[in-house]
Amino acid sequence: MIHIRIDPILFQWGEVTVGWHGLWWMVGLFVAYQIFIREGQRKGIDPDHLVQLVLWSTVVGYIGARLLYVLHHWETDAAQPVSILAIHKGGIKLYGGLIGGAIVMAVYARYRKLSFWSLADAMAIGIPAGEIIGRVGCTINGDVWGIPTHRAWSLVYWHPNALIPSHLRGVPVFPVPTMLQIWIAGLLALLLVLRKRLHPSGTLFAIGIILYSLGRFVVNIWQPEETPWFGFKGTQVVSLALIGLGILLLLFLRMQVERKVSGEAD
Image (cartoon, rainbow, N blue to C red; front, top):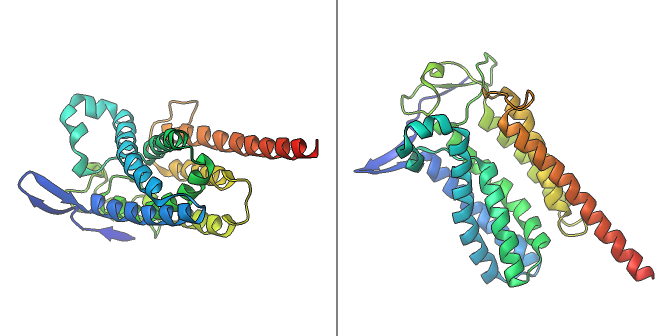
């Protein structure tokens, strides 16, 4: 078992609080940014457009990630509205960030007349790398926990500032952040192998959505959430929707290729 006794708060200066959660996600965001820029340039996209897109996607993506988290914990946050602004304590839903970032990317690509699918493929490489690093912050913070288990790989939180519910403090729980990191690392390795082999543009992005969402669906089995949607949890419902979206994207891209080939034959 892995015993976590680290204080999630790195340091506090007056009303300003800096935590390990935010620090690790900032490092992850920086790595994702660097990879996205490199992949975008490799596809011939102007770096200036890539930098502007990253700035807008970061702002809107974070708002989306925080908003989805608040909606997911609405009963708690509605009773304490001030907690909605307590971003230093962590609490984001990455799905919300991905959806927000994708919307910004689609709007920006259309406005600047850029290839959305090329941008999406570049993002499909950068985001997983950033999340692998950012999940270290979740592990320390205790804001993503699993069901109690006595397996050798379980996590045990001891620090009173950890965000895990008090009744689970000192109790071995399923290592959700670690399992997500392992799954995403495998996904990233696969995408790196395929990124120069898959055509047309957008195929890598679609495959990334499908496999990432599949991993989230599976790992979520060991998270203590209610199952109001026909026996499925909220995160699992979003995962299934994105898996369906990824499959539709693959079919759409294939139809586009077939239509192009058919047009050239005529």
